[in-house]
Amino acid sequence: MMDTPNRSRDAASFLLARPRWLSLLSVLAAFGAWWGITAFALVPAVLLPSPAEVAAAAVDILRNGYRETTLTENIASTLWRCGAGFLLAIVTGVPLGLAMGYWPRIRAATNYIVQFMRPLPPLSYVILLIIWIGTDNRSKIALLYITAFPIIASSAMAGVRSVSQQRVQAARALGASQWQVFRYVIWPSAMPLSFTGARIALAAAFSTVVAAELNAATDGLGWMVISASRFLRNDVIILGIILLGILGIALSALVVAIDRRVVHWRGIE
Amino acid sequence: MTEARAITQGRPRLPEWAITGVSVAVLIVAWVVATDGGFVDDLFMPSPSSLWSGFMDLVVDGYKSRTIWEHAGLSLERVLAGFVTGAIAGTVIGLAMGYNRVVEACFSPFVEFLRPLPQLAYLVLLIVWFGIGETAQIILLFLTAFPVSAIAAMDGVKSVSRQRVQVARSLGASDWQIFRFVVFPSALPEIFTGARLAIGVVYATLIAAEIIAGSTGLGWVILDAGRFLRSDYVFVGILAIGLMGLSLDYMLVAIEHRIVHWAGRY
Image (cartoon, rainbow over all chains, first blue to last red):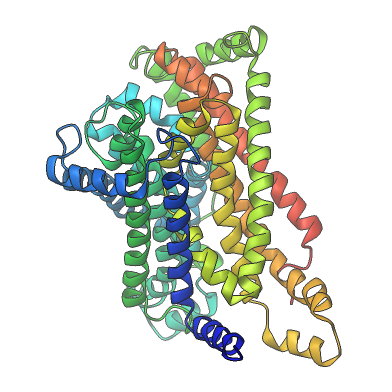
């Protein structure tokens, strides 16, 4: 009898030392609660399918697909749209942002456009894009591009502007050419902020991807979730939400990993 | 760098505001020529005059029995309801997460899961649960603001300097006093940064929510006008949404300057 408090204190300190286990426990508790609610039918089964039903839906969709599109196809097309829009935004936004940071005239001529676009909710111009481009994949990629572009351009600009003037002057005084100043002073100093911008932009593009798949899509995870809601397939909706969440976490982890490798000098200036 | 360039190149420079002005003027002229000159169909890009008459229509007659001010007011109400509840709940949980590792370990999986999740994905579920209407939208906005504020508050608490806490403790401060006079003020700038981020995301999500599950509000106006190919209304709606978003952000910045006037001055 004397052992119990001690043992529970041991268990507590064991868990305290290992926060990951505690997190796992908390996730398990949430799943337990979910299972309990469905098992004892506390809410109508139409509204909340049980974990087993969601797992069954996952297996079914993996094998047979959802409305003739397999799960891998859906994941692939969502990732493709996201990636295409994001990469286009990097390819165009980084040079423009660097130029905006470097040349005050270019900044003066373009900055107000970027700053107006940045806070504009992506869904507000989705209708315009459909009127302009149509309902195919291009308008979806364009939507994600416009979401990511102003974030990337502004952060690249901020990166250049954060470069210390002393360093630029020191390099110039030591005889560096314009290109050398850019390549060896401005670029490395602008990278950390540019990468932070890229991370935020990817997250924004990812959270817009479901909106992009709202209209006239025939594949993608967002399409799957929206289509499932029309048929009251809550198991598919929950499966889609779990997959999108995991994908979101994986994408941001990926960018953090790339950031660590590429911008390894971040924070040690 | 600018001075250096001016000296080395030795030519008089247009001031930057003039360049911005020229750039705006060029855009406007291009817009007028393209639309009134008949190069671009009115459907793709309304001309300035039809944009203006569209605006007057929306202000005077309104859109589907409500004026644009009423739609904007409804949108604003939803944003504030979702943002205030979500930011307060998120900040409280975030402060606890920063303070206590057990709380952090228990909540962080859910916060980390919610944060990158596209909001529309769970809106669909909320609509099934609560039906199309205010409840689903406000819960959606709550869930949008919550993780952003929680993470900001947690980071804020974690960034508090240990020395300060130890100094306060060695001077005999109680736990509550340490929280009230050391931790909370140090975390407040980050909490406000989080609030600004949160209101931006909440606003973007609201427009999405109104497009899917609304029958009022600025987002819905755009969607509905788009269905009838009234691109003049769509443009007015986008401009109104942009301006309202900017003013929400300015409002928060103004509050931030008043309350966290010590930010950046340590």
